[in-house]
Image (cartoon, rainbow, N blue to C red; front, side, top):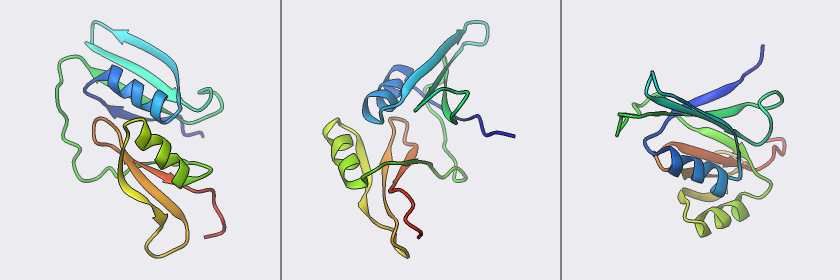
Length: 130
């Protein structure tokens, strides 16, 4: 078995693709419109779908808002330097919702950013045995 992708519903596909590619540095791997179903799918990631787990953005053409509920938590991305990543993201207009620093009950350095639809993305330092 293999984890393939995580799907997020978005309200503005162009804005979301811009965030994930320009701010988080992912590549748009593929995009397809489904006119009969009135939706578009876009797959993004840091490498090919064959070798990596990716994100699927689903844009339903006639939906302006979603309720995130309280079950979904976040997506996590490892970055070499959490502090530098946050500086870069903030300089490009990204929203930092938890400033970088050690986790409350440990040593792992982390931060949280928010995508245009309010989904949380955790930035983590490489594992250091903590």
